[in-house]
Length: 139
Image 1: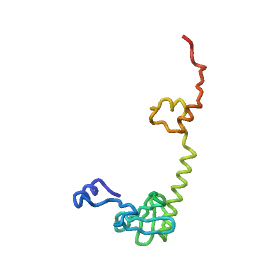
Image 2 (image 1 turned 135 degrees about the horizontal axis):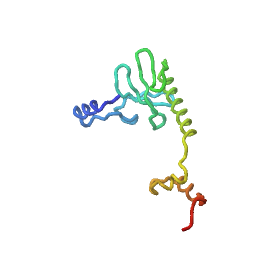
Image 3 (image 1 turned 120 degrees about the vertical axis):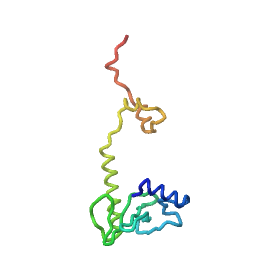
Image 4 (image 1 turned 90 degrees about the horizontal axis):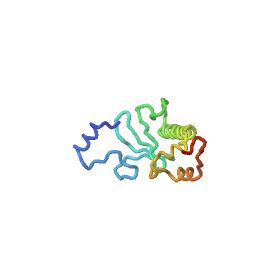
C-alpha cells in the first residue's frame, strides 16, 4: 500500500520518478500470462503486482515466498495465473451482483437532478415520463 508519506518521500528523492508505471512503460517490470499482464508495483515479500486485463487494471495480486494471493479472497494459489483468474472471477461476479441489485432513480428523482448531469438514457426516460396529476388541485 502506498501511504502519503511514501508519496512525499518519492517526490523528494526523484521528482521525475513515476509511481505505478503502466504496462506500456519501457521501465515497467511486466510479466505476461495468458489473458493478463502483471506489473510489479512494490514490496519485497510479498511483492505486489497490478493485474491488467486488456488495457484495464482489475486489481492487485501478491507474490509470497511459497504462494500467490489476491486481495479479494483468502485462498493461496500456486501460480500467478490462478491468482489473477481468481481476482478476475471475483470482479466479474461483483459487477453482475451490483448490476442486478442497483435501483434506477425514479423519474421524480431525475427531475430533481441538474440537467447537465443527466445521461442520455435518463433523458430518454424523462421524455417518455407522464406525471400523475391526481394530487393537484386547481386554485
